[in-house]
Image (cartoon, rainbow, N blue to C red):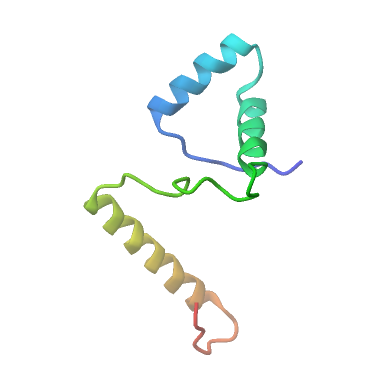
Length: 86
């Protein structure tokens, strides 16, 4: 089974840890179940506000800067150096 890394805010992770302790299940199992439930809602889509963030303007700026830097690095490393429309 492939593994992945996710970054969860400390306050949310504390709530998750409290819940998994009460349910006597692993953190991994809880997160998998939560994802499965989110994907099985009636419309078959993520809840309307699921991808909304509460990032500060500075954090949003840094996120966009990081994305631009990553895009530039990917383009630089491509064997075919022709411009691409990402």
